[in-house]
Image (cartoon, rainbow, N blue to C red):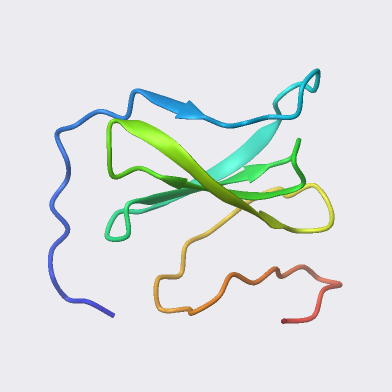
Length: 94
């Protein structure tokens, strides 16, 4: 874990191209931001996963979706973890 202060950016995020499936409404829930890694994570219920967005520039760039197997209701960032995991009362750690 880093002890350096994170300096806020004065550059506004102006757009994110989400690459949604055609004809489907967008449904999302909680977002989380890792300021050090310049990543935005959000629970994308439409794509049934957590989308990872590069926010190092004013226009966010979609990187990939971490599939969750069922519509996701939230997301949290744990910068000291080495891999994305899914936890729920009925899921096992992978």
